[in-house]
Image (tube, rainbow, N blue to C red):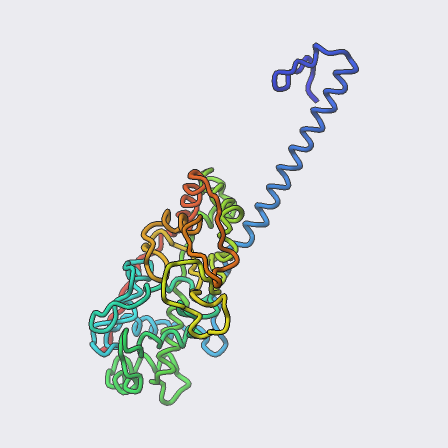
Length: 357
């Protein structure tokens, strides 16, 4: 308790009678308690919110494709090998390049014979935590996804039936497959190619970002605007309704109101109204390195993305129930962008494998 005379916000209590001083003292104590409780409640809520974004301790690998160093080495080699395309000029890394945060830096991908594809090449960052794959969810596992672009006529245009024979004619690959699948007498197969590439892709994980350091307790890792942006992200901005968890993705599908004729997930679920024009929620790790944005590459900057969600979307029956005018202020938009940039990590450069002969 303070000694009197005591001034609180310009109020000199010593000017009042003894009974009035007692009243003011009690009121000041009560106000202080209320403020303390509100601050504690807010602090507790933020702590609980932070826990939802904590990084996992390790990478999950499926029981039918467990991790091994040899399998990782084989998968990485296959991933960067352009001989896994019909033209011999395209590898998985052509469209999912570590130099572009595992994308290609373009609005729309480029496939076989330099033809432009209909969708943006998505990043492969943090796919180990996804539950379904491709923009439209047509692949159920990462192993299936690994072969998808390879056999697509529009992308790498490779006849998968010829793949084992081609790889088996390369002595270096014969040895790599033996090391990766030592329990098998004939390890060179399309199935094992998928397992090896998927194993490598699961190890492509974004590193620790300023946001992670803040989550762990370093209050200096984020500025005040960035911290407010985190609150906007989880409240008024309604971003966390889809961009949840440590990867900032619910691994689900939503129509976010882009003016497009591509119906996305709706092709596979034609009777589900909400799946028309719906596309997979992308993770937001390293998002400021992956412009332009959306499945069609139609939004150039993060500011464009936020303006789209704020009020620029197309209204139609399939529009996600989570999409509605946000009424964000100019300051809130800037704070939201500032927060999103705290999700970017300074990852180690990726070494290129020596391709076998």
